Length: 159
Ligand SMILES: Cc1cc2nc3c(=O)[nH]c(=O)nc-3n(C[C@H](O)[C@H](O)[C@H](O)COP(=O)(O)O)c2cc1C
Image 1 (cartoon, rainbow, N blue to C red):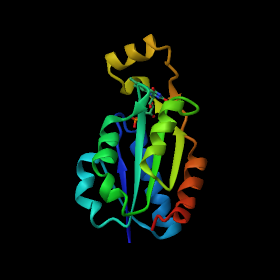
Image 2: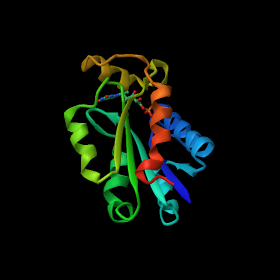
Image 3: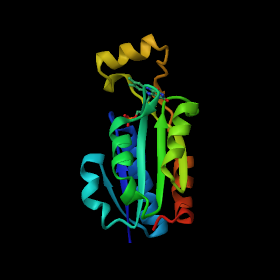
């Protein structure tokens, strides 16, 4: 039994969340996990008993690579339990993002605040945030909530 965790991440913070979820599943739920980025995840799909997709929110939408994985693998994903974790700088997901997340038939959808570390961003990214007045820098990840959620996943078919 193996759960594939597909982690898309521009600056590492969503990947770190995915790795923490994997660690919790391994150590407290005895679930084997593989963490892969969307480009490499397809190779694991046939052997995965369940799939967790972890993706950041960028400019008002789910990250494009994760969205492409979810859209292009719809048929394979419909055959196994799917769970989605989105992470963004905002305290709550925008209604548009929440609606987008509901379209994949996932057994559970979670949203956690991520991290926005100024030094990791390109000049263009910093400018985009400045223009949109979204310069909320900091690490807002609630590790206790993330771990609690990871422990609940076996109730949604993660195995
Ligand atoms: C250019 C840019 C645009 C962003 N747009 C959004 C957004 O629309 N909504 C949101 O909640 N967070 C937004 N964020 C914050 C990221 O989702 C957050 O920092 C996330 O934790 C980054 O994950 P990563 O480190 O895995 O890439 C944006 C960040 C950047 C740099």
